[in-house]
Image 1 (tube, helix red, strand yellow):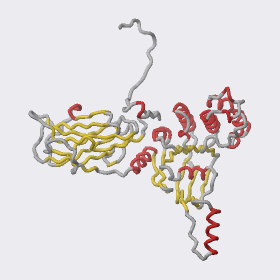
Image 2 (cartoon, one colour):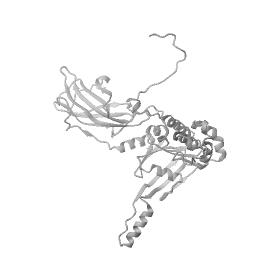
Image 3 (cartoon, one colour):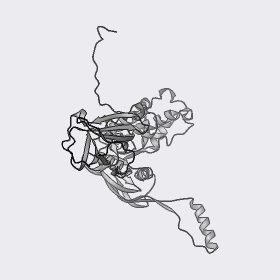
Image 4 (cartoon, one colour):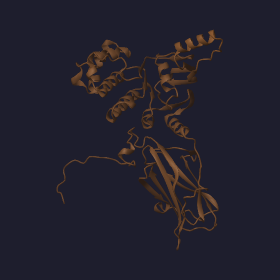
Length: 418
């Protein structure tokens, strides 16, 4: 595939504060013999090198202030880099601030044509796409009404519809999913996916990890203006999720809130991914392992050892319990030290913060509780493409994600019973 965007040593510097005021202060200080201070500067981007290939759907990820929007504005020719150069091959269309170019006193129809021209369409292209744009926006009855009388949601839908129906080789989209209701957001995702499947190149900035996972094929992570990671969209999401909170092994040795006889105790607890690498954050729908490190002081086999994990929300709502007795897994003789590992193939939790507790008990005749800590580990969960569709239910709809299949059966029931 050919390269359609090449970033070569791209850097962007901004001066902080009001420049005119700085100049006046420096002039005053010079006249009074004081030493001038250098103006404060912010490097929004530093030395970015990257190539986007024809047909790539690139997810751009990073926390607020990492340089994502600045990068897209440079690509869209809204601002110029302080140093470096950008090479672009093909027609580019940008959707950075939904509604830019709308005039409040013009009608919806007039604004469609005006906004289309601002975004690079010809008058004939807008006319050819007009009915499709209006149908997508769902504001058919208001196209002869001035936009100043529109609700914010109507204005957003119309603006996105115009930009989404361009036919550029390269489409640049910045956080369009931050506006509108959930139904509209899903409609936006569907349209972006349609553009991507048509083979066009898309650059997509979003904090919605499930949308990035479902729509994109590659991903980059920006951190304080620098390119921190580049790879597949899945690798980028995992890198970003775990860079937010450094992975850590939580020591339990000094915990005073444990219950049990202490003959076997949990000494530490941690999360690991499917490759066995320590992580700080779990991803909805991904495999996760919970490692409970232990020490066996009596050095006896402890036959029929039962380990229970409990998961609760931060508001202490019980989500689920998992136990090796339920799965029929037997540990065998317990060594002096080791780890009891629970692997969850697909984490069924929406994005939120959860608390993990554990109990180690012996189920031998006369068995007893050996060790319990109710809140042993905080487990942050990031959004993930659990259903494989980009849909992202939030925790307010329930504390578990349930995999299921739907179908329709023809005909009515012959009889009903009470």
